Image (cartoon, rainbow, N blue to C red; front, side, top):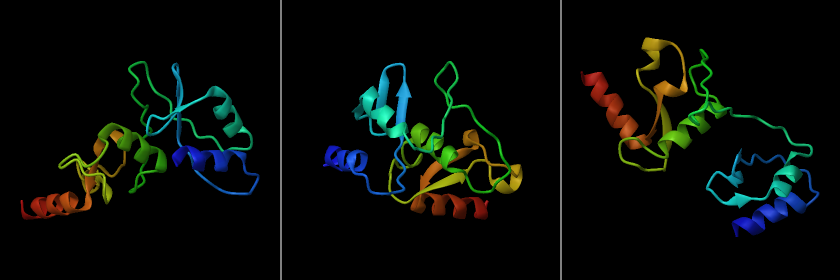
Length: 133
């Protein structure tokens, strides 16, 4: 079903605004779930696409971009999601929040190394625990 949906997306000439995350590295292209993608398909995606690049260092770690926004950018969310792959407390991938660690009120910035994925219930429990302490 996934392949059929992407085939429809890539070959239909209907105007759509869709975001598709594609990882391209030395081994080739793949979707975020690891499904391989041919170089030809990646090339077809680029025609008329808005491209955002996420650059990695030699250790394959995404390079962080500090900013003073309270909420993480889409790029920062992608970096944290790739690193944490679900709630850092229970592993759930449902109702995921991006939690500042240490809290944003202390640091006044949002960077990926200080963000953690937490599901809403775990985030709520952590917030209550911190408020009590």
